[in-house]
Image 1 (cartoon, rainbow, N blue to C red):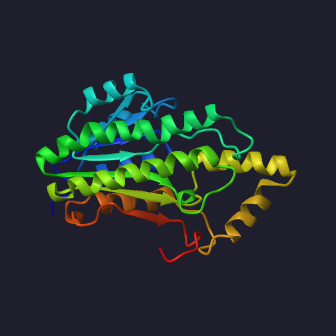
Image 2 (image 1 turned 60 degrees about the vertical axis):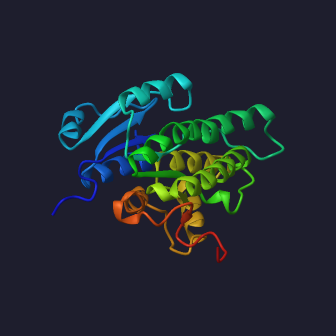
Image 3 (image 1 turned 90 degrees about the vertical axis):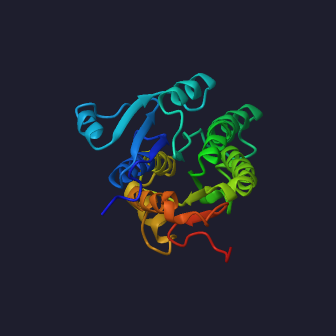
Length: 256
């Protein structure tokens, strides 16, 4: 049986670890030729040759800068699939951070992803196929005070791509977002370890308390996000677009 993404080329931003790496591997496993972008944490290059044989190529570039954008576009100018995993930014509550923090978050989590969408969506429309998935956070639906700057940036990006998605839907190009709740990634572990230290409690206690607030009783797994991403990127999913899909174990209340 032919893999669903056989013959398709995919670009995954923020693929060095966690959710981005899981998405890159999942797309490659389903037949795509994947260009995976990392910025500061290079992959295990002892594994790189195996990755190449599996259809996955690595490039080093900073997705948040114009120079990085040009480097990435040169390496993968006409992808059929684009998966955007924005970089982490420093956290802080609305009154504890300054406008520079908002600018940094907006540049990295709104402007930079939008640069790729605006650069690639017209090409996808011209070839009458394209799948774009933006990985975001559940805090866009239920803002977290300590995520003030990134909350604002994420919501701005979702508003922008929602309109673009409707403009290009008739060309078999879709844009959707996956809104993640707490997910078992290196970044989350680092933040929770710091929070436990601030509270003067063992990490295991904070972990158990946090998971108890999630109806599923556990963290999400990067592979679960990757499986959903693969579904959204499938050629069979051309009628699902302009949607923000929660993947949070039921943690965010609400019907919509």
